[in-house]
Amino acid sequence: MVLHNISEAKAQLSALIEQVCRGEEVILAKAGKPVARLIAFNGPTQPRKPGAMAGEIWIAPDFDTLPDDIAAAMGAVE
Image (cartoon, rainbow, N blue to C red; front, side, top):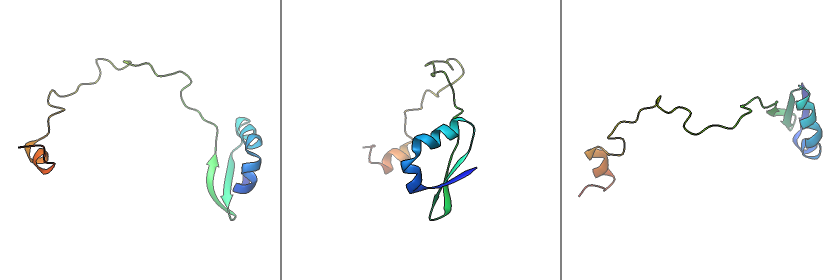
C-alpha cells in the first residue's frame, strides 16, 4: 500500500496508475488523512448485450398506471 498526498498524486497520476496495474494499492490522502483508494478495475471485459435477459423479466400490465390517490396528489386526475 502506497500513500500519496492529492497534490502529489495530480502530478504523478500516470505513474500511480502504472503501480495499480502492477497490482499495488494506492491510497490518496488529504492533509495526511486517507480519503481515497486506487485499485485495479475488475469489471466486465465484454460489452453488455441488449436483450440478454429476455424472457427472465416480467413487467406488470399496469406498470405505467398511477394509483388514483398518487395521481390526485400530483394533479394528474381531473
